Each structure stands twice: as C-alpha cells, then as structure tokens.
Image (cartoon, rainbow over all chains, first blue to last red; front, side, top):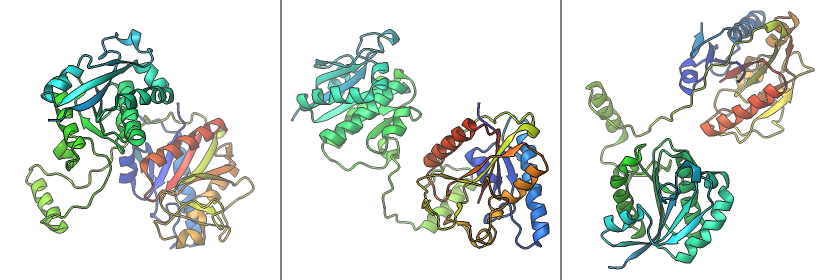
Length: 69
Length: 349
C-alpha cells in the first residue's frame, strides 16, 4: 500500500486529469502557496492555512479523486 | 516473381508444443512453417516462404530476454530472411513482449525489416512501438485469419520499401513520431472545421490525441496525525542557490533531495527557481511560496504532527515526459516509505 499524498495546485483540472487523488486549490501557478500581494503576516497566515488544509486532507479517507475546497 | 524468405516467431501455444505447462521451454527452431505459418504462405499467394519457424515458451522469453535474443538472433541470421514476422500476439503480454523485443533487435542488429501485431494494451507495445511497426489487433486470437493477411500485405510494403502511410491509414499503432505534412487547409481552418463537426455531433479526428494517464487507488488516510512524519516536496524546481545538481529547466532528467533538517524557512538568495515554465520572480523573492517550509515548520512546532521529514524531494515538472514523472514519483515514494514518512504534501506550479 502506498502513502497518502496531497497536491496543492492552482489548476485542479490538470491534477484530476493526471490522476492525483487528494487535491487542494492553491493560490496561483507561480506561487501555489504564496500571496505576494498581501502583507507578509497575512501571506504567512494564508500559507499556513493551506498546509493545515493539506494535513486534514491526508487524514481524510476518500474512495475517489477529491478536490478539498 | 521473387520469393521472399520469412522467419516466423511464435510461442509454445501457436507452435503446438502445449499450453501454460510448456511456457518455460527455451527457444528452438524448425525449418519451414509451423501452424499459422502456413497462413503467411497462403495469404501471400506464394510470394512469402516461411523458411524457418522459431518457437519459445512465453515464460522463458519474458524472464530471460537477454538470453532469448542472444540465442535466437544467430538462428535468424543463418536463415538469411528478407523479413521477420513475429506473432500476432493479441493481448498476451509475455508473448507480445517477446515479439516486440525480438523485432526491435532484428531491425537494430541485423537490419532486416520486421513486423508484429498485438492489442494496444499489450506491454510489448510500449516497449517497442517507437522502433518497429506493430499492427493493431483486437484482444482475441479468433481474429487470426484476418490479422495474418494484414501483416502480410503490410510486410510486403515494408520489404519493397514502399511509402508507409500514417498509423490510421495503415493500421499500425502510432509510434509517437511526428512528421511534417502540408495540408490544403491551414491550422485555423482545420480547428474551426473540427469544432463545427464536434458541435454538430459529427465525427472528427483530433490532430493531437491526449495521453491516457494511469489511475491509482487513493492511499489510506493517516490514522494518527500526531504520531506522523510528514514530508513536503514540489515539482516547482526549488533548488539550493546555483542549482548544484543542474536539474534541467525543461524535461528534467532527474529528481533530487535536499536537507531541510536545520532550516525553519527557505531564505531568499539561498534557494531559487530552476523551473523554466513559470515566472520565477515571486518564488525567487520567497521560495516558501512554492515549498511551504516556514508554514510546515510552525505546524510541526504546534505539534499538529510528529515531525517534518529531514529532506524535500524536488524535480522540474515542465514538459517533463509522463513516463519520467511516473518513474520519479515511484522512486520518491519508495524513499519516503523506507524512511518512515506517513504523508506527503506536494505543490505543483
């Protein structure tokens, strides 16, 4: 059995096409976990939120490809 | 009319030696046609003569491919054929593998044209389609009476060095080779025609078929996150300053791993973007925008999970061949599993 992996990507349809199972929508293609337009504190808060969402996805049982919104 | 000499390769079953119980027999040959070899002669109206038939057990061939080639090639050379025909193998994987490998070697080493035929899902297809012509068949040997004559007429073209048309016209499996052709209609016109056909529910044929991707069943969820080792990784090409392992900006030939065990974040200037397919400015300014080390470290400190894995795996996913990506994914997965990682957070750009 493999181990769970979650993909943070700005383009979930591609992730779905290529067969990723756990998918989280990231911010933008050049910075999936960054928000350069925000103040540094706010940007970090957003990034941490995405990582926490990813951790939650790793702990969620799924039976098919899932985009965690 | 000159008679063309053919060497025919078949497995133990078509060689009438037996079924699965005989699958381990090593290669042997008989001079003249065996079984369906007769069909090659008859459907060519005597133009082809099967001078030698090579028979090998499926297991033997697939498990000993090097030995298989080494033994058989001299037998073929000795018979001095104009052409080698292997199979057809239909959906039989070991048989198809043997046919594909043999034809590939015959063309490469002996320079003799060869043809085989099998079902598109046969693993022999992916192994050899780039180098040889594999005619497409269904998955059942019941079609053999139709397939052999097709192989014969295709092989005749090949031997006579006639122009071989496109896969769809000739019935062979696309080899992944692109050739330039001049069309009467320019690209924009063809695209709009295709769209109109599609909207009208008519048949249309794409000029660029999309690859079909493998599916893997979802892995089981982490049962106890507090005890889990978590890894972070990316295909976004975040590498140490100067890209020490020279990961290519396009179609990366490798993946690498770099230690992050002493780091709380990726500092600007010490890490940079090696990926050639996206604007590197935001991530060069703050590499954590692609590889979220700073946030993962804080989550670790807050004891949301037990420990962050000491390395991050990275490659560049920019026009990278799907096959390479699969290989890197497999290797990375094996490393993480061996090192006791329970879950992976990946980012893609």
